[in-house]
Amino acid sequence: KNGKGKNMSYLIRDTTKEERIALIKSWIPDDEAMDADGAPDLWDLYADYINGTKEIAECNAAFKTDYISEEQ
Image (cartoon, rainbow, N blue to C red; front, top):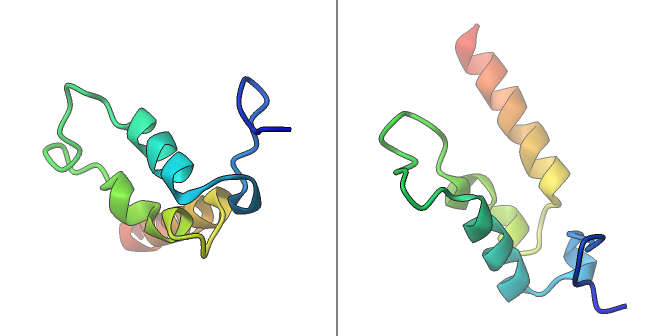
């Protein structure tokens, strides 16, 4: 299993740092500045994932918790 293709695993153990960086890059719209509309900076949000310390789901959960607590 080389981890490529439609059913690719994005778990840290199944990816290299370069693959994780490429994945996050693929989520950033080419024509949209993330900071301009107050949207989160994906590089900051997923830094722990890129560095191999948290899975995507953990980063997402942390963001949702912060977002909800800031809104209340």
